[in-house]
Length: 259
Image (cartoon, rainbow, N blue to C red):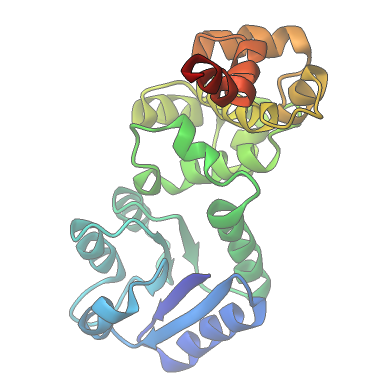
């Protein structure tokens, strides 16, 4: 389950956001609604939410300051900042604080439903752990929101042909800006990241002996057997066939050596 909290100093608005989470249902569970950042912080040790929806403008502590405080304490969940102020500086601050998304009021139920759907994919998508496999040395949860959207889109459409322009459109950003930001934040290009995610998916598929290498190539988005072999060997140092033999027959060989 994904534990979500809402922080909003306007009670009626907070109730609406909370209702959207309840109506969406599994895998989300509403863990609390708070009228201030301090109110959440007082109960944080027992709340430990995975997802925080927070207004920006609140008394004593802003929503962005709240997220920064949680991050400084080691929290790696997802944050969504909601603001009635269309100030670009606030969006910049939100990105620096590592938010998943930044929404401008008024926020309608359909907006929240679409957002929760994207978050579900990020948390619990069919291959949700592959981004971590591909970016082992990158703190995935602290990347800018539009980079996270690009990653979620890539994983959701992993087996399909994918261009940088299409991914950038899904992330609502220009291809050039996505490419430069992704390389700066992750230390690798988006194309290289996509190769690593697809290789991670191919590794899973190779553990299923009923699948041919053609099947593995198609389902991992690596087009054909030849391209699968070339990319797989460059990333792992092994051919797909060698990797499959190792994971399927390695224990048996070890037993044979012992006997």
